[in-house]
Amino acid sequence: MDDERPSRPTVHQIRAVVHPPEVTSRANAEHWTSARYLRRLSVYLTALFVRTPISANGVTVLMIIAGFLAGPALLLPGVWGPLVAVLLTQVQMLLDCSDGEVARWRRASSPRGVFLDQIGHFVAEGSIGLFLGLRAAGLTADSDPLKTWQFAFVGAVLVGGIWFNKALNMMVVVARVNAGLDKQPDIPATRAIPTSSLIGRLRRGARFIPFHRLYHSIELSLLTLAVAILGTGWVDRLALDRAFVLVMAGGIWVVILGHMTAIWHSKRLEP
Image 1: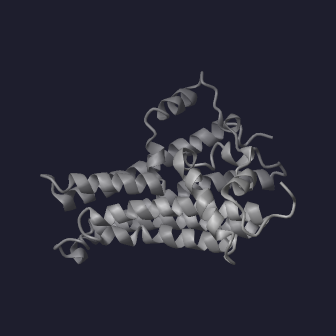
Image 2: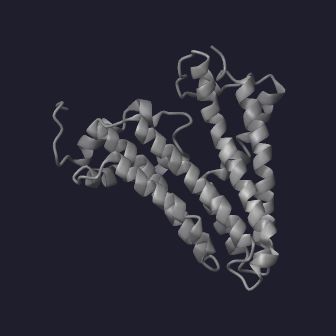
Image 3: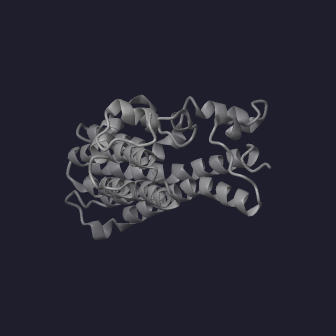
């Protein structure tokens, strides 16, 4: 299409610009919800945004707000809190698709936009982890939360693990930059591990039981909803919440160990 882009573009015109192969084929940056359905919807939202004065960074700020609110939503009683959290994380990821599309349409991609985008993901997943701990501490039940503050602390441990695990990928980028190496393309080959090795076999097995994916905002909110639904039956809801946050807080450190090992044995730190 012409270099001069229309002020009121059609969805077809926008899609031709904002969904290039180098975006839709990214191995690590694309969440499965984006590939399955969110990018099919986000282009319609983008078509609305580009007709307004809102900038791509403004859309990212909306994404940050939606992601953060998913955490406090968990304090709503019963299944309503987790259900609202699930909806908010879906909105978060929809806006996450749209902000990049607005930036590509307006040729406004920038380091500030990438910076804000990373803040958004850290805020969303950290907020959910923190408020899972507060939920387990009894803020939505009749128990005295001052007597169960330990579970709020477990939530904080969970947040620390989630953030550390996310930061590992950034540490790879920093390591390559400080070593004078170029950024690697985001393709599966850069993360490949020899399948003959023990680490390679373990990683291949993780594809069938992707426990490490449960700490993304989408999966974490869905899993929390499943636990809340289970808690409406014969299982004690508060006891289930506490067991859930303990398992997740312990499991994230197992994920971190596996993530660090996978990075070390992959090509991501090679010239």
